Length: 152
Length: 185
Image (cartoon, rainbow over all chains, first blue to last red; front, side, top):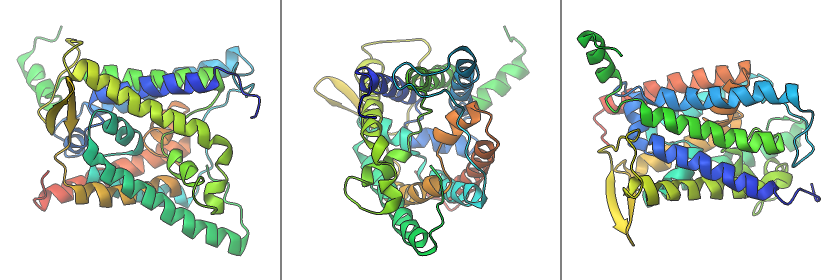
């Protein structure tokens, strides 16, 4: 990790800018638009989520076949596969309550801040608080039963 | 072109803001993910940043496991914020116009130094309490809308598809219940 390619961080930054611009352009960075979708008043948001998944899915399918390793890290190309357990459903349901109440998710909250939405700092404060609560609790239970969760 | 008036009316009902801004935005979200993946092999999600950043200030083992990735995750998040600002300074401010962009009537626009910024009308308590649930849920559930929704679904991961279906159904039920209780916005 110490000898990262000098273009590593610039590429991460550019990727983030394109990602954030897309969240702004689609207006998924606006909680009202997400809530309108969840209340079945405007289904356009489906095109953001599945459009992005299709575009990235092409890269996940193609890159492992045409190249062995990524140029800036030397890492092998792998798909994003995570082990399934009950936490995926429990955590997903808790996330759903939060998303349905606030209309905002982490990536959209960062982009929303960029579009000038200072009020979204409430949501970001809540997200950090929630991440801290579960991390504090799970660090304690993990050290008491020494089971490595292995979740990313 | 679709000219059937019944179909046109149905499309207008389902997509009152059209689909182009959503499709273009989704393409760009995917493109940002692809740029990072092609260069680095990393399928980047947005929510691990919450925990990896806490590793700067907390010694809890849950956060310390992300020390190796915390620097680039800060840069990724800074990029997303800058991307939102770039959108505000160009399209939202009307400096760049596109027929693909449909401006909405939600929230409030305000100006600072010639840049048109936007702020939400959704009540702070909803954002704070909802954010708290989002923070817990995304970390327990191993991903958020970008990690599971974009990278995981793009990888045809059954775990991620189960996660997305779960949070989508629960979010729809929650939002409809909150609206039915008369909370607006």
